Image (cartoon, rainbow, N blue to C red):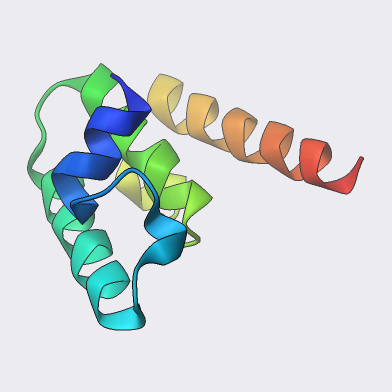
Length: 86
């Protein structure tokens, strides 16, 4: 999935830092709805990762059906946390 395409689709711009609070909240709501209704595991993970970067991702333990998906999400979150600290 292309990040710019996702941002434009859900937020109407690739520069979400320019959005006001209401537009940002609406985009996050759209993204969350898409996440919960997406049947494809790969697309679902990409949507979750974007939600995570925006600080609004659901807990991997409840967000993903399989242990493999949950482990991947926890690993991703830990890697992002480590990168942010260094």
